[in-house]
Image (tube, rainbow, N blue to C red; front, side, top):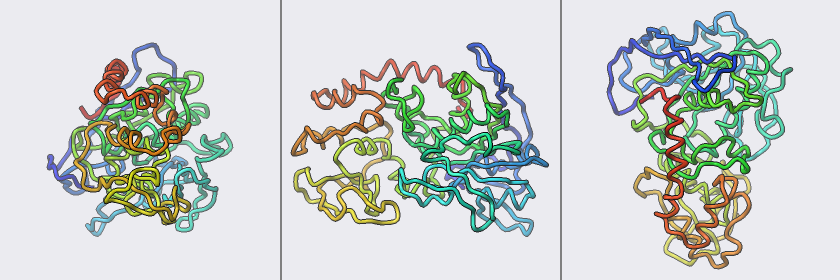
Length: 413
């Protein structure tokens, strides 16, 4: 996990952010502890929380551990033979003799192969023999009996910085379950590939769902560790519970840095371009427009049979990321964004253009759009022809209030 940017090879300072389980007033009760953290080998660039293992391995010694992770929970590690290897966090912890008890898997499953929204069943990891508990479908929050005998839960998932990307929803339920059962949670932080972007409408409470659980903008500009601190500090857990939280920070990282994910965070986000365009194009999931599921260019193209014929077209077919894609075997016309300039905001021009050009505007939006947007206003603004600039102006107060709140929880500024 090496960034193009080179920082000092040895890092002597990091922050462990400890958040107590007890209630507090308005000021967040974070206790900061300075620790010395060095890598076993020089590393020229960003290191994830998982790679900052001298900070968390002592916390897991002789403990019975549950872990929330999937295929994104990877780290570079120098073996005793001085060979750099890429390991899944589960394999790494087992190699370090940590007493792993269970794997808790979010949407897409432990190996990251399930379609979006597909039911994932409990099972057993064939490699390690560890039981796998699905945190999707009817069991989004671990039950007390599923946490029985566990002393500490480790959370290691790669987020992409969008409100409707459900790993932060899984984080909420894990924190709540840990708080209810007096279990410590250790979040191994990872960079946000859209980390400098804070944009979009703030979710309104009446539109709360699993694709939007908190009053934040569509792009929140935080790492998952920072976000965990916000959940605790803003008392968003049920009954204002607070989780006993430790965030293991990334090293050599700032929000504005470019970070290329070493692995797909989910089946339909295959590369940096898709991840950058994800928040802007995911709004199409609440319309009759395809975002390229069933192609090899997911979230880098859009189109439908109801848009005007154009030079660009595609035909979705079942594939690894979509067993039954929208408009399967039907010709779709639209736009190819694989070479589009990287966006630094929530880009509305594509959805506005598609709405204006669709053959039947009454069939363009579906109810899911409001859940994704977190407000009814955006659909109304697009339907009434409100300009891009005026739509953005309507977000200003919410974004300013959020940015002020967000300051308390940032680690990498």
